[in-house]
Length: 145
Length: 145
DNA sequence: TTAAAATGGGACTATTTTAGTACTCATTAA
DNA sequence: TTAATGAGTACTAAAATAGTCCCATTTTAA
Image (tube, rainbow over all chains, first blue to last red):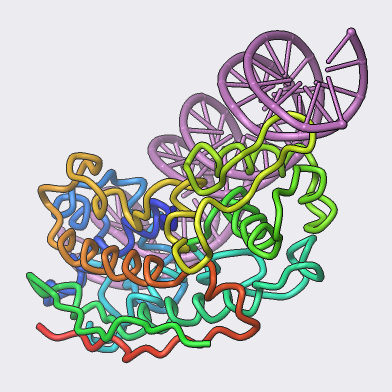
């Protein structure tokens, strides 16, 4: 459960790859470094560029580069670009999507959990993901009434 | 992204419903209280019972009841019963599932995030979900190298 | 001016997953 | 004995996912 789709998974791999380059890298170059298939890499690059996370240079010698430094790119925005907003349940994101919304007493609590997860993904940056062994210093959630 | 499937969603609704009963409730009764369709409710009940979260009583006047008090039922085990183990990416759960595992530098960090999410879902109980407004007191994660 | 190298934007198809339903067997209380 | 009820399984339709390909546009460089 709670899996991100493949495209989002690849997306982070691609972002990591580009974060380690000093100049724009084209789709073929990304393929060689990541061992992902070329058509898939192209698709991911286009989506990331459209989301404003990459800047593209067209024409010969063109390619893609990060739009900002890795410290300023959250894990969240990469995943959202390729897999939409985080919503654990239909009801936790927006109202009116669930048939039994009016009979269900737990919607508020789902929203709280959703927000917590969003916050976590927001606070982790691409730079963090590049560290060999990221540590998450977290006071675990204490649920109180 | 990170959506649980409908069955898991329904599962928690059903568990909440049963947590508020003082005696076993049959599938029809759950349907009436939750407004979910009968076939779906039956399916969910069977899966929850098989996972040991509910005890079933067969025959006339039979039905289902929680196997333990809500304080002892984690959100995690309900979701796992209906939607499998939490694994944000293929690589974060088990080795050997991802083609590019050997070329990818971020697997360890995904595992850390996966563990964090697991811990959160483990620490929230069905009893917490029944509270009108659960609060999550969390020190937000500080990522350090 | 032209050819080659890149990205940009769609469209398309096969596969897999999900959702929902139905049917039959086993069990039990009245 | 009978009706109520869960257990197990199989099935179908719909939706999401994954992966690929094509062609237009832009830019560099010869």
